[in-house]
Length: 102
Image 1 (cartoon, one colour):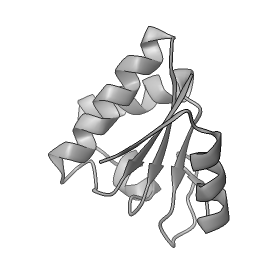
Image 2 (cartoon, helix red, strand yellow):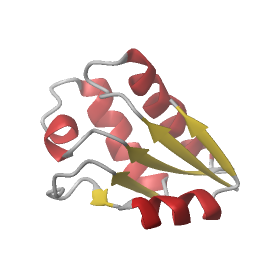
Image 3 (cartoon, one colour):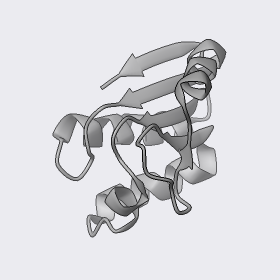
Image 4 (tube, helix red, strand yellow):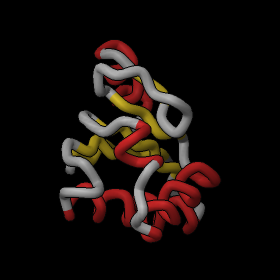
């Protein structure tokens, strides 16, 4: 089963966005669901320079168990996230068994 998490907030600033990452990392480790995350506004800088150890742990878990980390932000990502456009986001939504928006 696959789950797409569309996260509107920035995990360093928004507790809902941080909670979405925690949930996705937890179900990924469980092994029954393959989570994919798409950040509407976050970029690599917002995630990669996170001094928050909790967020770094979630990112590592999601890289190991998830279906991918994407951004819909206009800036090109540097490595943690892959960029997706409207068509790519529509494909992610179509391919997911469940879509959750935070």
